[in-house]
Length: 411
Image (cartoon, rainbow, N blue to C red; front, side, top):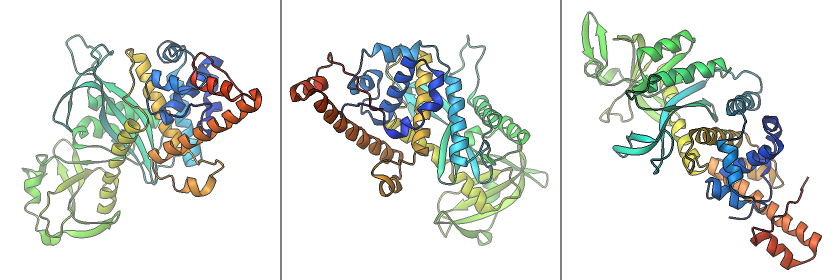
């Protein structure tokens, strides 16, 4: 990794919004850690600290995360204001065609001494793993997506009077998003979260929901109770309609129907093959006035949270922390959310400008572009140092001797 001499421009652009939360030394640690999450190949505290050419002992960065007196909730509030103001042009996001996606993910760990780490079931590999499990919310609007909130889930134990289920945590995230002015029309989630509690919460907030239905959900029709999959098997395939959605052709059947414990909802059952030979997907929604293709489109937005998990883990060190205290770990997650938000918002108005920025399609692309800035700053730093000392051996010593820590202002 090229030594880091200063943060990339996409971080410097936003520092003024957050610096009042910190003392002057804390502001430096804040910029350092945020930069490291985006550009460092090793995103542990030690790895980030060592990448900076003027680094001091990594214990200072550890102290910033674990002990220092700063308010991570206020930092997150300012991040949400940044989303509302920069991404949507005002204090309130526009609800039309905006979706709040709810899901959970595992931050995999190996050390049992980490606070509140536990065995959790990983569905992707069908076995228990050690880690932290988080329920998260993501705002999706057209070509933009931003993480909104998270809650750490802990399995129920005999001595846990404050236990909250994942459904309860999801409800908190939905309510919190509305309370903080994040506007959206619909909440999208997997069938695991489809419950009377979530449905009631969303209805009270004046929102719609879209979720897959499990095949054994009970349809109540003409005083009969029948599993929804069995009911749909009675519908002739000849009545299915077809529609292109996001470039994919779907064959679907839609009906407003009464589902046990959910009441009257709109269901959309669809296939992706013309003979309907593939496995059927059954969606349910409280949006009785929406068209079937809009229901399907809304559900497709759920995939965005999977890309967020992938990007935040592969590119931003979401689960790379080597911290033991939960306070530091939670702060790490807040800073990852901020790094992701800044990358989503960044216009990359650097010297390579418009052609480059127009081709930055992914979070990984933007991270690599930030690294290119780090290289540029490092080259400029070498030139400045050589001009200052007029001694190439001295400059080499500054780069490779960690005891020769030299601070130089580029302001």
